[in-house]
Image (cartoon, rainbow, N blue to C red):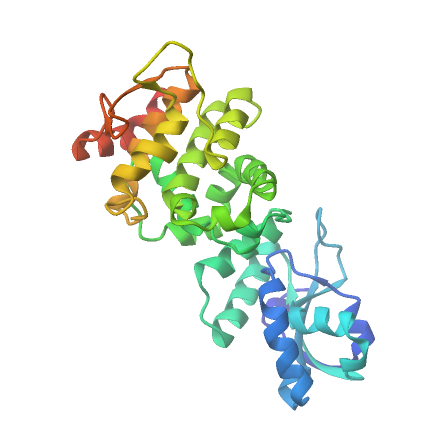
Length: 324
């Protein structure tokens, strides 16, 4: 198929044929678009609603089969028509592209998408879900609100060196795949928690999830102490020690003392400067928990011995994974 990458064909296709196609591997999540587009389609069908794009592949791998076609545009409408057969048109106007590898598919897909809408981080994350065969279960992950935590977590593994193109690099899957197992584990955990509570300021902070990604990657998601850490954090459970006062486990220090001290001063700051500062403090506490080390607390508000100094906190973040 020499030069077919630059070939474009146009055909009228029976809608049933289009509905049988699978989406390309990098197709982003469509759930958040279905309600809005359903309302548009239910008002009046216009010619542009019939325009879709498919791609014929000239290779085979674990997802694609040579000679088959895959939908590259119109996937939301396809799902709506599958769910609502009475809304389905008889035919669609199809633009057909050709590709010899996944890179060409991604190039075509991104060029089509960027001409039709402004792509945001959430869109890229949903594309990564599909590309990595991840099917999110929790509302937290379905909302695609993991982009910034993923950036900050990878920043920690990059010795704190900030990169403006980090999301572009994530789009290349390296960083997403790096945290894939931890992300999947946290997704299953988030299902068990009260979503209304997760949305609160205390737990919605990108800095919290970033710290959980970093700790999970360091110790492994199968570490029993890590499972307990996540459970105790979101359920605000403290490990009590009979006869011992002034010592708190690291997890309770995070949801209790640390939050009380910084809730109006940096808790939700996930910027390139503020994020590492707060994550450094959170990591200090969570790592202490993983190592069965308690933290000394005075008057239940002042934390003694914790890295409250800004410079030390940032340095802790920057050098944390050097101990792995």
